Image 1 (cartoon, rainbow, N blue to C red):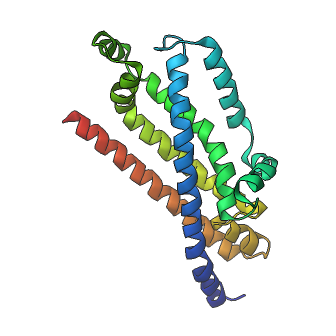
Image 2: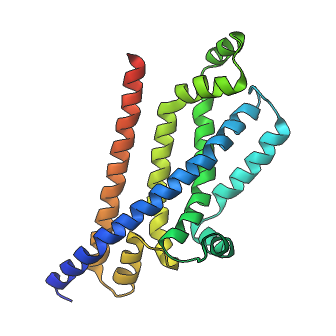
Image 3: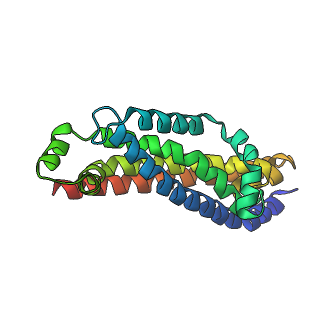
Length: 225
């Protein structure tokens, strides 16, 4: 295949699969946040010195989170085929890939949020307690707002990881840029297409990191005012 044919193929495939990657990563990041945020908050509240210290809940939830974080994504995506098929109706394709991506990202994000909440100085929390704030009020008006820049950085890191995971989904029939790199690049020995896909993925990661850092700095700047 000559250069002009490679370029036409890349122009036909990459824009569509880039949108599929954005769809997969965006949806899985959203669902991972919905799952990971409450888990991270509960881990912080029930940890030693937390507002609702509970060793049993913390250790049990911590073990589950650690198990979720320790399973390699390539194994996870295959292991939960039956669950994905039951939930989505199929275990392959772009939409189906959102399920393992979410399951892989949620425990990671939960730990990130827990760490971000632990950075808040104890006197700030104690002041809210003295003022008569409920646990829910402290979480909503103290913990999350104070930790927001770190949480945003954690979400950015999670999205970057999801971009890499989404590329791996191409190994088992997932859509996105991974599909282009594997099915059209690797399997057909098309080094040019693999290189172009890699460059697009790297640029996507840089854009996500830049946007995330910008939002985090904006929050810090607003807080400084």
